[in-house]
Image (cartoon, rainbow, N blue to C red; front, top):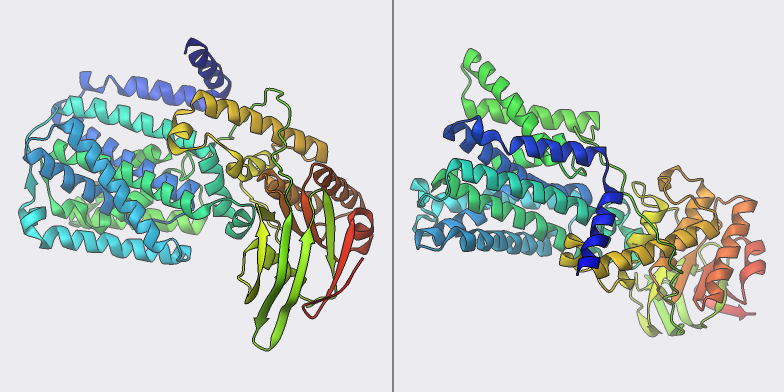
Length: 548
């Protein structure tokens, strides 16, 4: 146990940087606020911190996951109502608050299951409707939600106690955000945020990860609502209207959606500007609520129109390797396809196609444009369903025909994100608390990824979007291979590559083949085909003409 704590301390020391020092100092100073402010001011500060707690959860879904949820205020309301009902019957806060958080998480996960198939604009619209529905229910179903009178709860901790609790929880939320963002969960979400199709092609389970992201945001919202209602002493339905969801969304964007403390920065900015709005409203005789709504709308318009990343830009994620030997996760089984048929109207894109991909071999699929090569590759990958035939394999990863790297991730982060299926210790709790087994596995995978990139000559820490096209194509191959899938389907790997990059691509494919992978390459460059293919299959009009 002592060794595990020592190792964790060393990892923390290596990851520490100036921003972390400043944040720790800021929280340390803020802890002495009860010595300076009275109860009324401390209550306001605690309320702002609970708002920051809910916003931090939302930032994980919005910033890391790229999921524009506009229902966070509704999940705050769910946690508040459930906790208030429990407090009314004598359940202590230490039980009621976690139940409120769990209810918020469950509500958010349910919403994710309903809406994740929608495009991002559809997710934003659907969650905004949820915010309105919950607000209407709060004011309409009086027998449970208290109606316009609200739910009165007994007093809990003092304002000073709530402030210290809110400060501690907000700090922990920021730490949890940072831990999850650089875990396999966060890297997988970021990959899907940048290029969903490419992430799915590498075997990253986007739907599961996104449901988890929604649940995390809902848990933070539910906990904030549960504690906030006790701080206020009453669950007022008017406090949980759609504007709360809108305000939380604005706070996240203003502060920085991908920074661990961005939500706190957004709350501070909103608080400062709210004072200005109150002053302007009093001069112009504008109602308090309207002046704040107008302010939030102006802030959102500025963020969107200027393309601003927020007050706090994301820090560089740091990865350390311990020199562990690479891990070869490939198994020794290939892929067998029987009599595949796929038609689009009268056109047969695949007409009775049968092929076998042997472990430790490269098969090239060639043919003129429109011959059905990409359709066959997508059938083998499971991206489209065949009209007839069957496919047997133990796991497939593929690259896309277009150049598709994850623009906000480094090459190292590409490989770590794709390595998710290989991880044994990647659960939510292990990622959040960085357990010894999870840290050891992370070091092993990081060493493996660095070795792969070094062998291919790709810098590990440069943004992938800054790499030349040829290196981006090579990175796509390495990313697919990092999933550990025994079968790789590679579509036009040399497209746009220079002659030197072609050699690196051929060398990388040969290395993967020698490691036991079964590889299918769709390629127009016959020079590359001649240098790498053990077998060539010619396709025309969806039919196999010749195998050599």
